[in-house]
Length: 89
Length: 144
View 1 (cartoon, one colour):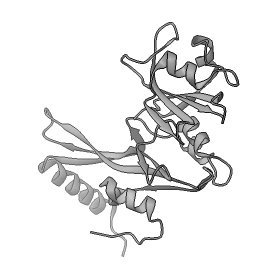
View 2 (view 1 turned 120 degrees about the vertical axis):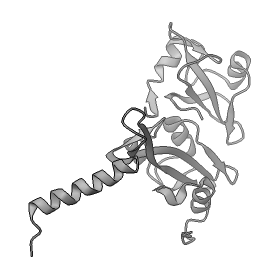
View 3 (view 1 turned 180 degrees about the horizontal axis):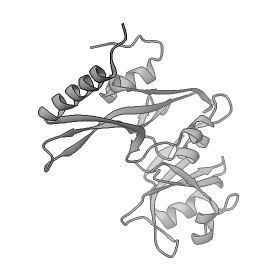
View 4 (view 1 turned 180 degrees about the vertical axis):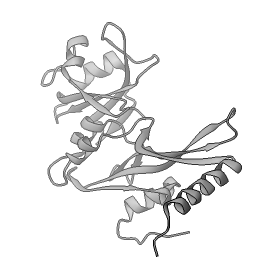
């Protein structure tokens, strides 16, 4: 079982509000709440998520924990994101 | 003088018999991860001078240790190199022989990756030693 970076489009496909270059940090906070971890004074946020059977993300649950990593630019707009399978601690 | 094949077989049987008598049989295996491990290709693709802290987190997810205000990030996983079978034939219990692995990453003030070091072995069974080695790269290793 290894840490594995998944297709980031998975997140955008099922969580329609997460788009690079569009989504703001405010929107992310409003929808997902506080992140599990913050790096670089909040420029990088990590949420621990669990994928439901329909592909949507859930912040609570059992099974495999994925790290949803969100990187914002200086204007707090999402620059890049990824979903890392087994990426939680 | 060459040792005869018969003597070698006898020696091997004697060793095996001794292990069985004492209820302990070592079985080496191909190294394999226990639990979640980092993919070697994934972390080797993160080259110093070419990637940033964000690239690392996007690729590997959350590290086990955040050190010195994130100047150092350290990932940790366990690899099994074999098993020791203890107990009798009806109550044999395989105990994995493991060693910890650590990926130490050091970042500069501009968030770029400066150093990437993979260290492993029972010397680092105590994570504090691995943390010290990560932070003080030039410090010689202590052998207890």
